[in-house]
Length: 282
Image 1: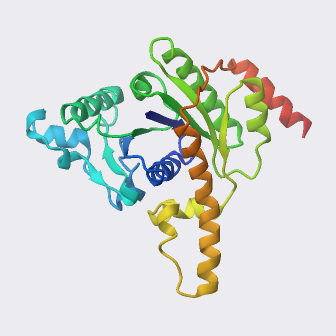
Image 2: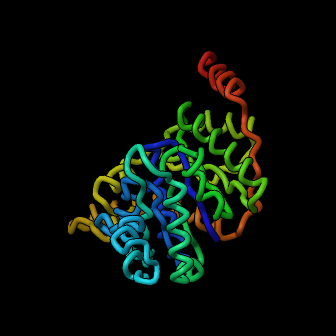
Image 3: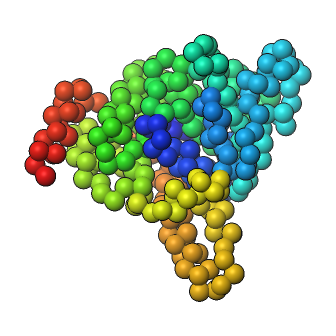
């Protein structure tokens, strides 16, 4: 199964992706997470450092694929999740889609692309035009990360449009939305009522989710880095288990290989009217 995770920039896609990858690994699946962002930090919380990118490794080898071995580009991460960073073109030059294509080509050359139960693409921001829509060409499912705000739902709607367009030529479906770190879900519910799609999970506004990114650890790993005081330790374990269960629930839904949907996005005018009406009424 191949998954492509999209959403508004800064919404928490990498944090969500890393924790979903571990949740899937905990369910017995062999997982490869591919970061598709020029800043190459998608897998930082899994590996603990910025791993070399595919594009840098290819460049150093003058694009001689035969000189590259799996250990040159695939790094082991926490929870048994393997990690790859595609990297990106220089700022203002090149194409992100080319980089993703070269990454997939190299992994296929190494037979690595076929050795995993799950391949998860964590994709740069809400840029779904041109090159950065390329992971949708390889994915079985798209997952959209959002919050309960207008900007994130506007991005989600644009991503939904890209899924619909790609589904014309690829066996692609939208698995659903994940609401990340939000105290409310009223706008999310209003949007999915108007534009029907599954909601896989809505994670509450819990500080540990943000802290995990700052600490460079996944929420699953943070459970193993606890205070020595037993009362505090037990409280942290309970809190972390509570949070991790959200990601395990998402993993369980994905492993059922859901039918998913081909979304019918709203027009910009419909979306503005929908959410503006809500704001006018509160």
